[in-house]
Length: 87
Image 1 (spheres, rainbow, N blue to C red):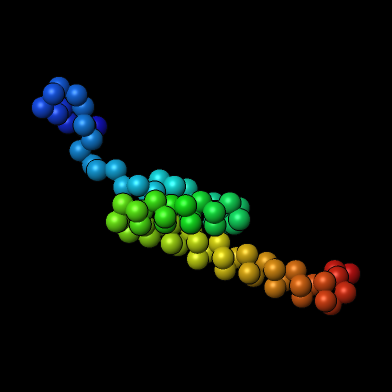
Image 2: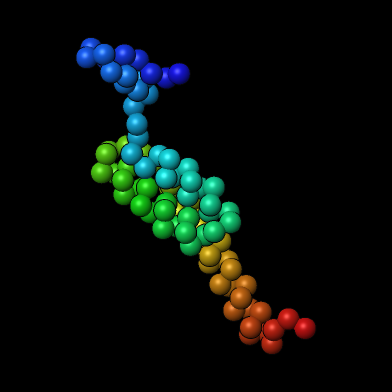
């Protein structure tokens, strides 16, 4: 376990918690399947991390991946509709 006993006898975490880290990882995984939700979660994770003054690369990656996939989906959808649809 990653726990230590503090001076008052309570357990403390040996690894400091990074605000937004878990949310950033969750957003990163979701960015491949649920882009809109991942985009929102990634932005929230970035804001939480910035308030704490720590970087959050997973959150940044999830925002970029989600935005690119959403834009690609919109472009493909417009191209299909403009060409008369799928035959």
